[in-house]
Length: 87
Image 1: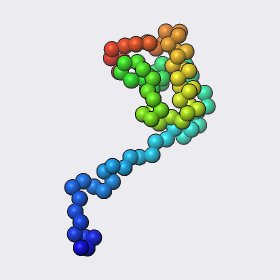
Image 2 (image 1 turned 180 degrees about the horizontal axis):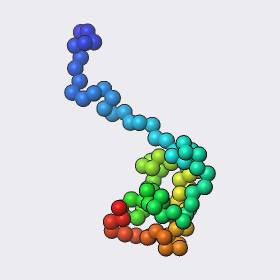
Image 3 (image 1 turned 90 degrees about the horizontal axis):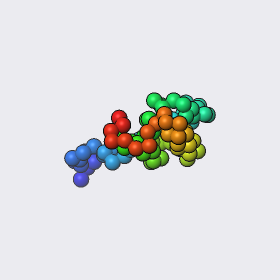
Image 4 (image 1 turned 30 degrees about the horizontal axis):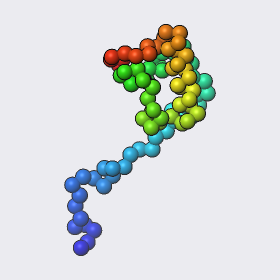
């Protein structure tokens, strides 16, 4: 059986995923501003919960900083704690 005889239903790269990257390291951002709710809302889901690292692709260091910034923004009422449809 030659290699040309093998046919796939889906492409061979179907199960592979792109490598996740930390957007903060790539852009060179060192400080996450808690006073910018439009930027922080990217890291919240529809219910207002903080998205986990495996979904956002952040490194551990910056995921902690994002979580701290979101909590500070919630404390001074820039972001809601809980919502039905945030986005």
